[in-house]
Image 1: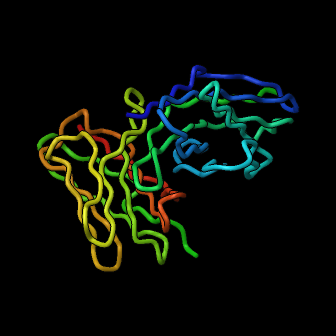
Image 2: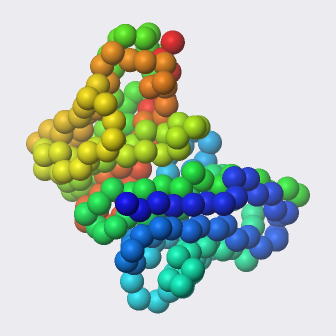
Amino acid sequence: AQSVTQPDIHITVSEGASLELRCNYSYGATPYLFWYVQSPGQGLQLLLKYFSGDTLVQGIKGFEAEFKRSQSSFNLRKPSVHWSDAAEYFCAVAASGNTPLVFGKGTRLSVIA
Amino acid sequence: KAGVTQTPRYLIKTRGQQVTLSCSPISGHRSVSWYQQTPGQGLQFLFEYFSETQRNKGNFPGRFSGRQFSNSRSEMNVSTLELGDSALYLCASSENRAEAFFGQGTRLTVV
């Protein structure tokens, strides 16, 4: 079965600083990989996804993620964080397009001035 | 297109009661999935319906059930509510299962 680990429960960054959120997955083959963001009291919004091909994927709101097969990782990055990026971020994996999403526990991002 | 709509947004129920939550997917989407989100367990998959048939099921007790109608709208039902069922219940719809769009959720509080 697949599993997802987000090692950081809470991260605080200054506005304008760069950001990297870590995600490691456990799965024998290359899974479908996703990053979602959730603002308080809201549902999940898809930031980006990786299925195959170029290992660096661009998403919405200036986010990007890099798939590294050798490290079983799919880390999320943003070069300059804005205060509005404060939210909870979830990494998710699916074995294929026909299986449910398995989510990590999430990383809460705080942004300070 | 309108997004995924979940009703109601908030619910307070008493232990032992039952509850029904509703989800209207994005127009044209035939797959609807349900997830439970709690602080302790995180996001856990409940079940998925596609064209009125349950296609996948998570590891939840039989008190949790669902169904999907011919217009793709879905309902989930929880019978004999327990305090531990308090959670945010999220519905997601998808067209090709490669990208799920989530609703804002229904916050269920069991007292």
